[in-house]
Length: 305
Image (cartoon, rainbow, N blue to C red):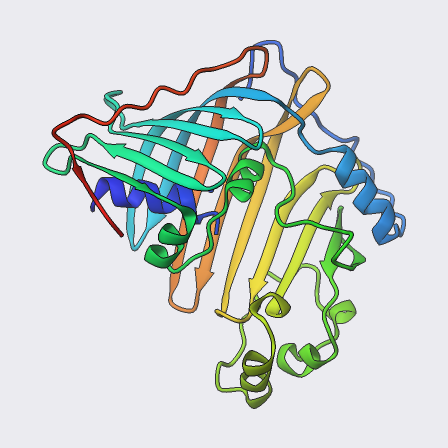
């Protein structure tokens, strides 16, 4: 496997990509009582209050990935300044740095120190998206790491609330023309549905693809803990490209008044392909400013995608 390509692909695309000794797990009180019906606006407000807010973050994580029937494990040190920069140093089991990345809202840079594959890349998210055939975005990467909802805008999108076992589910509403393609109204979709794929030869689907923007063919679902209202799972069904993205957060930890997931699993499913990235945050700090060292050796060749 091309080590650097695989790491970059997982970190950027699974997108569609801790516990301090003083931390305590955040666990909601388990109740056997059925969940009360809650409005979409109520749940939206609760989820907004539970977002992880920060200015600076330094963290360490252990990561496992499965890509194209191959698997890799590595360690990562990460530093972030909110809405500004993400710095990542990636090392395999032996602890020698192999890749260093610097990501901003409008640029992606990395240096590969992998033997026999030493090079650097300077570009933007558009180039990465074209190369991978998947969407990539700074805000999405930032939010996934700390467990915040991605691509969530209640001002522009409308949602329907449902109950799935011990979780509340917010599902984006879609236009009536989507019913023929999906086979059900959004209020009738099973909130426990693991995947949703459609027949690309469906005549209604073909017409919708031809007439509508890609954004109209995405169904978004957010699963909240029934007691704490913490975001535990996000599922996107991209019907335009016939694929799905699922992000699961677990083992929530406390740092000050903030909550973040100790473990995250990201899975992208296409008709004949599944990509999985799992990471566990082993240390997280928010009490200091960080620098972001990034240098390109003079003898490294630049790579273009």
